[in-house]
Image 1 (cartoon, protein in one colour):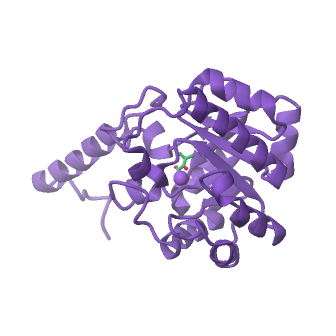
Image 2 (cartoon, rainbow, N blue to C red; image 1 turned 135 degrees about the vertical axis):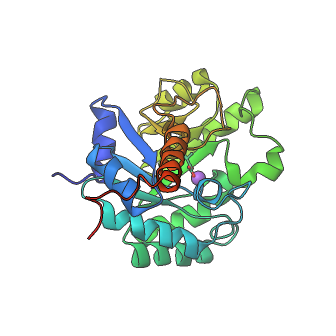
Length: 265
Ligand code: KIV
Ligand code: NA
């Protein structure tokens, strides 16, 4: 198997080949998604919501991200593994950003990190890149800033915010980021951004005119139930299927059907 690298990701954009990305937080799921040839596995800080049940991404710690990342790395044979720097581990202090990144790289074996934001965090991005660690950017709806935004609604509908986003995307490219996630922005703006830069854009709720797409795996699989944004396509309803399996298991125990003659020693 040919391993995915940040260079392959950039070549895919040049060849107009779409990039596929999904979140992964644990060994078993990462194995399946890697076997499905998903190009990039993102150890997202959405683990804070999906794995730990927090309302926002803010509480997850660097140690917890490293635990998730190392589990994913052990499962992967092909995918590029990108890890979110969690809230508080990079903003406002490039030295702390580099220390956090070095911990992730050394302790998990991941291949790249992702940071939310543009101009505000350029010192952190520069310092991480200068250590030889590839950086993925993240613009638009950046969930670590939820208390600044006040809502998870679509971002950059106004001219001023849209222009800043384009400037930020150009800056991230100039700094040396290998790709940028664009979250929940108008499709037209995502197209403009993608045409304004040479590095790939990965959209989530950003329409089709980007270099690739990302979704939270638990949303795509229907393990999460109440989260129903317009951009989400559910490929399975695993919540109901798993519930049915557990109910059946319970019924079989109570009826004496499980274990049967062959299921014992
Ligand atoms: O944490 C996450 O899952 C993400 C993706 C939605 C891009 O950052
Ligand atoms: Na994230």
